[in-house]
Image 1 (cartoon, helix red, strand yellow):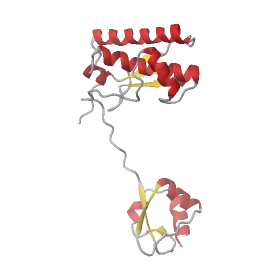
Image 2 (cartoon, rainbow, N blue to C red):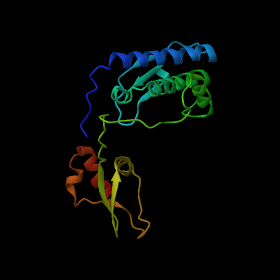
Image 3 (tube, helix red, strand yellow):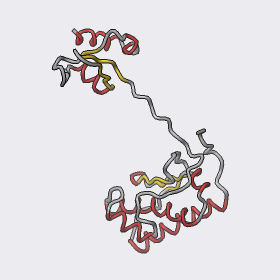
Image 4 (cartoon, helix red, strand yellow):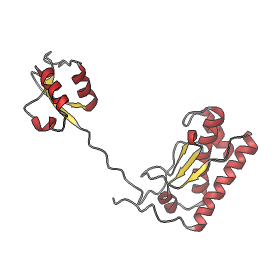
Length: 197
């Protein structure tokens, strides 16, 4: 799937609905929960294939995904999503709630949001992040090959030893596969040779 263009502005009526939902949910927090912190910052910069909105309480920020809102312009979706994120801001900053716990659910209900972790919505055209390929290093024991991730490899270079559970021999780098270690610095390659003996 191609990456969506997040630069296109929202339709004026949709942006007005989002801002109205933002003001309404904040006003409910002030009136019903005596919320006294400053109004959060509203941003339309969220790029995600699966999230319509995200609250960042320590920054007092609500980020919304323009592509998902364009796909789902219905008032029920708009209000529920914005109030959901406002509930995270209020519950975390005022009550020290975490995630979608009982306190957050109570705040979400007061603000008129569905007290669920997520909902179903159209994500057509939303950005899809390509998973990063994890760098691995070939290791071997007396009976089988292993792939060490970067953390285990770093631990090996620092002196950690690994033993195969099957054959009980030490697991060492497979130096026959030199290309796997080609991107290492000179110092790491030197350590690798010393540790492989």
